[in-house]
Image (cartoon, rainbow, N blue to C red; front, side):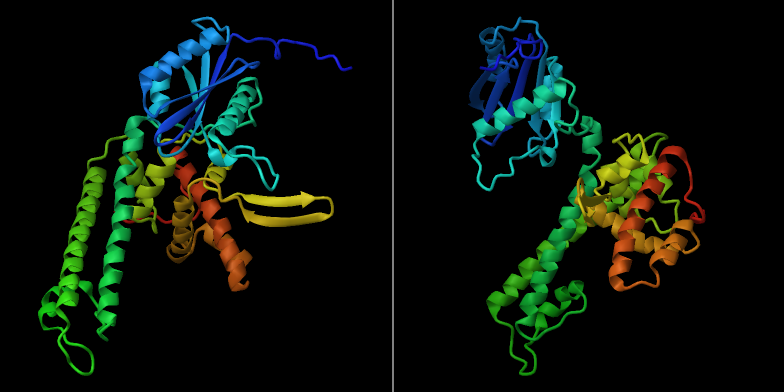
Length: 379
C-alpha cells in the first residue's frame, strides 16, 4: 500500500484559481484551491453573476474572503476586455495562447467545456506554482494600442472586398466574351456594351447586376482612399515617441513603403517590447523547428507561430529589399548563399532573409542601428 504525503503543494491552499471557457452564450467557470474543483456556468458577459460566483467559490473551497485570485482564459473573439475588467477587480489574469496548450495525443479524446476548463485550471495552477512552461500568456495591449491597429486591419478587409467586386464584374463580362482592362471604364462603357463577335445587346438583368456591382466597387474604393489619406495625415502630424513616428522612421529606409511600415509597426513593433532578437523571430513564427530524435535528424521548416500576416508581409518585403537594397550586407549574404541555387533554395533563402530583416528592423526602430550597407531615402 502506497502512502501519499500531504505537503504544502497538496494541502488546501488559500489561493483561488479560476479558469474560463468562453462561448457566445455562456461562460464555463472552473474554480480550484489545488485540491477541490468547482464548476459553474453563467450567461456570457453577466459580470455580477461572475463576481457572485467568485465569492461563493471562496466560501465553498474554504478560502478567506481576501485571498488572492488567479484566472486565465484563451485568447480569442472576446479580446482583452475581460482581462482589463478582472484586473480592475484585483484579480491576476492571464490571456493564454490556445495554440500552446498541451493536448492529449490519443486518437480519440473527450471534448467538452467541462473537460477543457478542468485542463485550463490545472495549467493555471502549474504556471502559478512556478512551471512557466505550462502555458504561454500573450502580451495584452492597452486600449489605445489596440485601437491603433484598426486602420490597417479595416483597409486590409476593404482591399479584399474591392478585389471581390472587381473579380465579379470581370466574371460577368467574360460570360459574354468581353474583356475590360480597367474596371473604372465600365461606367462609360456599360450603356453601349455588346456581346463578343455577334454584337448582341447585354441582357437587362446582367446589365443591372453589373451596375450594382460597380457602385459597390466605387464605394469600397473611395473608403480605401479615405483610410490611406488618414494614415498619411497622421504620420505627417506624428509626435515623438508615437507609433506614427516609428512609421515615419521606418519609411526612411529605401524599399519600405507606406503599408509595409504601417502594418509592421502597428501589429508588431510598437507595443510588444521585445527583449532580444530571439523573441522577435519567434513571435513572427520565422524560427526553425528541427527534428532531432535518435538517428533521425531533419528540418521541419519554420514554426509558423504568431501572426501569419506579418510573415506574409515580411516575405514580400524581403524580395523588395533584394531589389532596392542591393548593396546592403543582408542582400550580399543572400546572393552568396542562395543566388546560384534552385528556385526552391531561393524560396528557402527568402524566408531566412525575412527573419534577419525583421530583427534588423527591430534594432533600427529600438536602437537606431541602420542595417549595414542600407540606403536611406533622399529628403
